[in-house]
Length: 76
Image 1 (cartoon, rainbow, N blue to C red):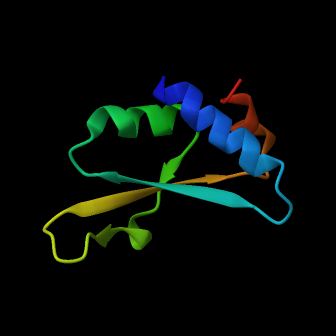
Image 2 (cartoon, rainbow, N blue to C red):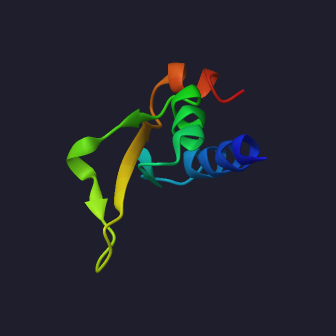
């Protein structure tokens, strides 16, 4: 189900004018989610990681550029 949701989000974003990339955040312990994002062409963007305010929870950022045909092929 997660794969279908991410594909739908990416497909929608591709149709929006001016959107060149999307980012997804995930807690460091969510290893299955990280694998899903990577399998769909997302790459870690550690320079954009951040902590939840007031919590000791680090969120990793995964980014997908929307301009490449290689990224598009991983979603079909």
